[in-house]
Image 1 (cartoon, one colour):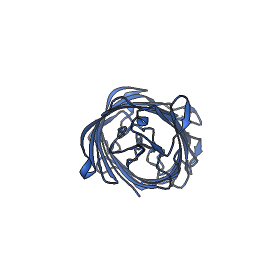
Image 2 (image 1 turned 90 degrees about the horizontal axis):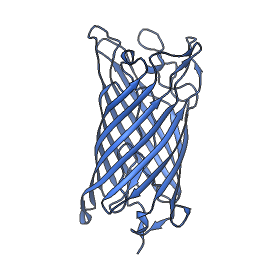
Image 3 (image 1 turned 90 degrees about the vertical axis):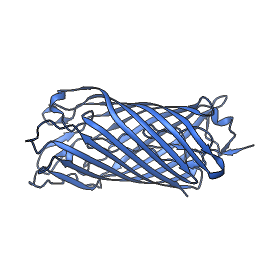
Image 4 (image 1 turned 120 degrees about the vertical axis):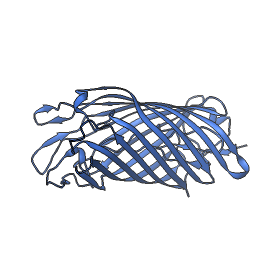
Length: 325
C-alpha cells in the first residue's frame, strides 16, 4: 500500500540572526519522519500543492551597562513564506522578512520589511542507489535515507540605507544588504524507528561588499551552519488527525569577520553552539512549532565588545505556523 509522502507540511526556517534572516525547509506527516523546528529536514512539497508559512523569532539579548542606551535589547524577526511543489522532487519558495530591532529604552529602533528571498529545493533518496524523490512512498520506503540540496538568494528590496533617529546608518540595524546574498546547503534525514528521526544539515550564506550612502563599505562575514536534531513522536491520534512531536537540536553557527575597506573588522565573527528544545503539533493540514533556543557554548572574536551579536542572547523564543493547501 502506498502512502502520501507528506500528509502535513511544516516549513522550518533556520536560525534568524541578529542582522540576517535565512530560510530553509522541512516537512512531516501523521506517519513517517519527524521534522525539527530549526534544523531543515529532507522533504519536498507534494506536486501541485502550496504551503503558506509564518514565523516569529524573538531574541532577548544580554545587556551590561544600564547607562548605555545603544545596547541592543530585543529583536523580532517575522517571516512570511509561500511555497509550491512543481514536481515531487522540486519545490520553490518565496520569503518576505519583517524585522524589529530595539536598543535599550531611550535608544534606537529599526523596523520594516527586509530583502525578499527565493529558495529552490531538490529532493532525492537512497534506495539501491540515489534517485529523485518519488510522488508516493510506502511506510517502509519512508525509512530510507532522504536528502535535499537547496540554494537561494536574496533580492535587494529592503532599505539598506535605512537611517536611525539621529540620521546615522548602522549596517547591523539596516533593512537590507544592498546587494544579493547567496545561500546553499544539504540535508539528510533518517527515520531510525517508527517514532524516532535523525536530521542533519550543513549550509552556508555568503554576502557581497556594499557601499552605504554615508560612504562606509562593508561585507558581512560568511555564515556556516552545521545542525543535528532528534525528533520523537510523543502522541498520535489518527482519528483526529493530530500528532505531537518533541525535538532536541544542536545548531552550530560559524561567522567570519565582517570586512570594511580597511580590512577585517574587530569584534565581529566567531563560533556559537545553540541548544534547541521544541515541540511540533500537527492538526489536519496545519502545523505549529514552538521552541526555546539558547547559546550553550561560544568562542567569539573580542567577545566583550560583541553585545547584541549572535551568541550574546539570553534566549530566542521561536514560533512557526504553516498550512498546506
